[in-house]
Length: 398
Image (cartoon, rainbow, N blue to C red; front, side, top):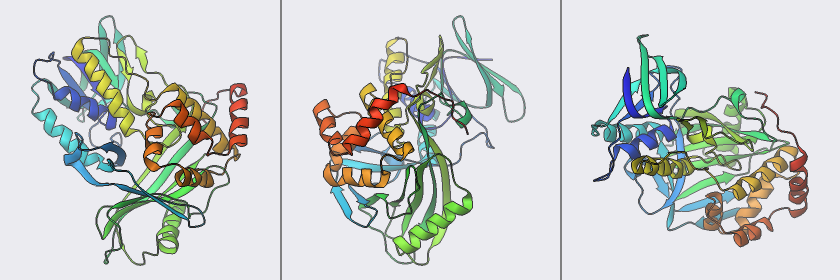
């Protein structure tokens, strides 16, 4: 059995971020022994994925970035183009394998941090902490006893808390290489709504140029169910060929994902010494699916509490007012009361991008939020807000 002050279960964005923060012990800070429990290679380990976020100036993970940009572009359904400079912010692209390599290097230099490969079966509370039980790749039983346990494993769709509204953000992307310099390396195509729109929800294309000849091109939907692989491929062929006019190119890799967007309340504590962090604790912004920046705020607060000897309950990932507005938007999209493509196009056309990004981070003031709200379809949104308290919360039917 291994004993530690802190056990972190899972090596996604939240687990790696917390391990990184705790391994970088400031001079004079309280010593903490940490065990990071990660799944061995195989079906329990999540596939490589891309995280995007924005921040001003240099950040702690810049050495691992694939690329970053200072301009965002949005295309409305009928072709109108909105483009904005978000300086001093930069929109940053981080691949999960590069982030993991960066964290592994920091963890390897920390005498107080250990990485352990095991598939976790249970996390059980004890009188003075908690115990993580699982099995190593060779089948040997593994036990880790810690004062505090942070479980970062995402919940399965069938295990999501009951909600009034749950949409899925599902996507399929191609990493492409072109023989000609066709991509604008200074600008992200954040939302390109020149794609066929579903009856309820929305769809868009997404282009992250990593060079003049390379980019990640994705097709994304907000809707109730994921698509088949064939339908994603068809949507990408339409987007890259008919919309972007790229012609011939090479697909070097792919990525696929599903992100729940829900107004469900997530538990941040499941036992006296057991906490959830990351998406499992509600870090995903319900209206957009962005998670990484909220994870940084959450794990930063947890690390500071641990260093100070305080009870390390993760703080709410998003302000209550932001979540209330997101609940209204989700319901309006799911009911078809609001045209999602027109809604977001209108926002980007009428609100400066920097203010919208601050809004998505929950950093706008009430008067700014009212100003943004007046640029949305007021009557459908008001009708939706009035009906929300009357709606029951139901489990998600996967």
